[in-house]
Image 1 (spheres, helix red, strand yellow):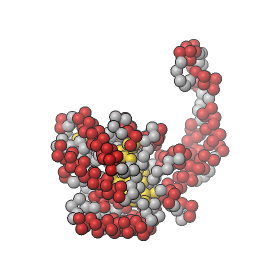
Image 2 (tube, helix red, strand yellow):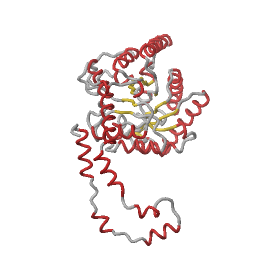
Image 3 (cartoon, one colour):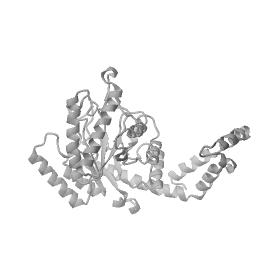
Image 4 (tube, helix red, strand yellow):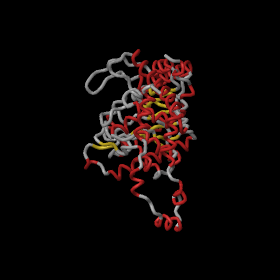
Length: 389
């Protein structure tokens, strides 16, 4: 294995306790791997070269743990972090697993459930902040419906906004240096989940009391489930200044949530995603929210984790090769050049510019007949990824 594809701390590769710790059970079959403690998972991640570990509150501390059990788990977890040098960049709250959240958390019809969800999240924020987390992710896995008549969607949006405003004020009041990142998903485990796409959240954020504190955490699989182009969602979030965190995995389009190893399915899409993140200088963690195949033991889980990081680094090298390839860059220059004579007519509106543009004589036929060279460009990308350039 080439040394240049070994993860380093500056790459900021992170995994969740729920990812490498996933025992491989599913709706149709039992666990295939023994469950490991949070500390054991940290040591595994240290062994494969990860930078950090993220967690839901109940990944780390079971929801029904006693105070003594909580203290013992935290001691072992902190020791593992110290021993391995791993950090905790992100934390989140499980508001979807316990039966109390079967109708949602922040959008539940029962106000007692909504209040409990706030209480649970405040305690979890305290835990995340105490371990150094800088980003707090919200995935509303049960914030949705199966029965359309059961919930007023406008009231649900208002309830979600009220909860986030409350929690932003709580973070400010506690003096925590935390920012929030909202994670979209179209469906599963609910029939339909509110805020199904990253774009939906970007619109919603601007209605919050503290929009500067809140961004998004787009996930490859969640956009691909809806048949969307993930890189475009990431680009929109970046352009808006809202790419606070990112979840990397892979997914066949329009399927159930598969959470495969990064690059396992859609290699070209993964390439352009890595190229985008590297080109714009995204400085946050590269979080792999994925699971090893159910066929694997824990040696296979290590192969999975190493594979996620190795594929990212290989594609990072390919992105640099793309940017340095004289033929590709020359073709891109031709494609993007165009006729600059109309440049003064574009950009910011003025009445004089509008009048000049209305009078301009375009050669519509010639514009429609011009070849753009996209076939050649796409083939060059394929050849680069196939290793023949």
